[in-house]
Image (cartoon, rainbow, N blue to C red; front, side, top):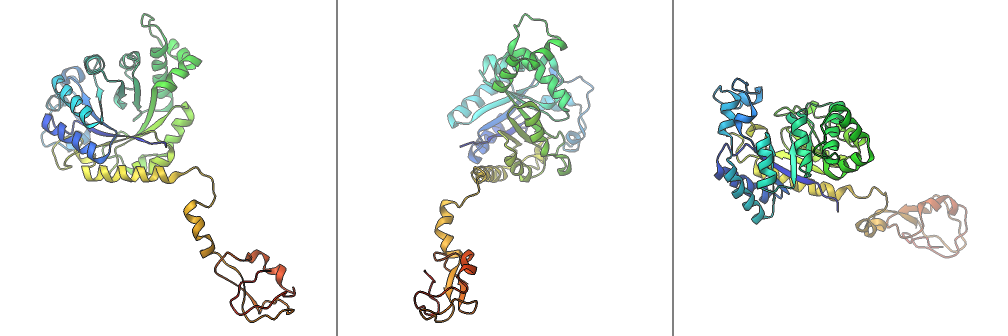
Length: 359
């Protein structure tokens, strides 16, 4: 059966504490998530000294500080990653992390040996970094917050080039476009890439979620699609399942009132479990789309339907009329569709009131 891959996005909700990171893995595993995802970065490689926090980051933190200082506090060191990966493997949940700089990407692939990578919305226009991702040969999940179809086509061109061109080949726009247009490039993309629809705001307003864009992405690029949701609660993830999402990502926190940029727009462990249980029920309920009685319905069919019944005593040789024929349950006799055929006909046997007409 087709199953949506559920990513519990722990992100930076460990607040820089390895102990909290372990607890987030436990919560994701208990809730039934397939993957738990973190973020790997060196703050110094990520932002300039004077970069400000985003509105949602500053409104969820008590202190006014630069992005650099905030990110330094949220860094997990490389050694911690080995322990977290090892713990995930013991539990049987996939460990995933998003790299935000080249050094971290190299570490995830070459040291940790990850086979799947996530390119976050903010890095989609960072063509050199996208190319580095493509050249790892890993499966790629691409978030598309803040992007248009044209921008996505460009990034897919970079990836198609990275997957098909030799590493010595000097990248440029026209080679990206050529790789994207080629059969080889399209095949490589289908093998390696899943696009996630996403609205980059925390929490994302419901009227800006635009779930129909999931179908637009699938239609435009003929690639597997998913949904990275930042709205409040579990309604939007559940609503996305009928759109055929192959991956669903949602932020997880142990406590929404914790200090930090993403806790407020995250699910707690109970909500995550509720969401995943809901997803599994919806997947099963979608069915094959063929409208026919189901196995469990068949036993109820004759109970809920009706048949032709004698409403009064009818003697042999009497005429069936609107007065002596009625329509009542159960439905295992003559169909009410035949009602008009019987009116005016002569009874070939006698009936007591309530007898099924059976001739």
